[in-house]
Length: 84
Image 1 (cartoon, rainbow, N blue to C red):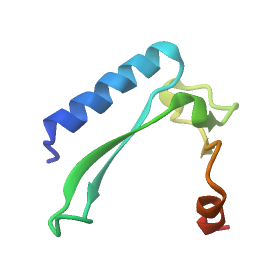
Image 2: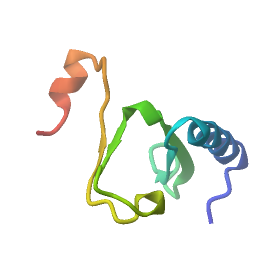
Image 3: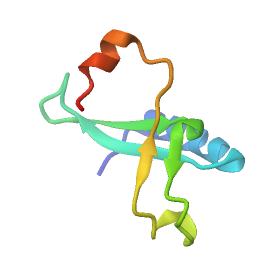
């Protein structure tokens, strides 16, 4: 079980603020960069960078077929390194 309380609490708090405004999204993952056993990380996504299926009608977009994360103002070198 992931138990990095400070990181999770911070991301959860930000997600609640986002939910009041629009749409909240956070992603929980294991980061193996510094620890071979994996450190828990919770990443928050700005709700204004998210686009979802306009045909989704159910709560929490469970019937949505697509979700997009659109980043603006990405440095050109970083953009060129992206796949696709």
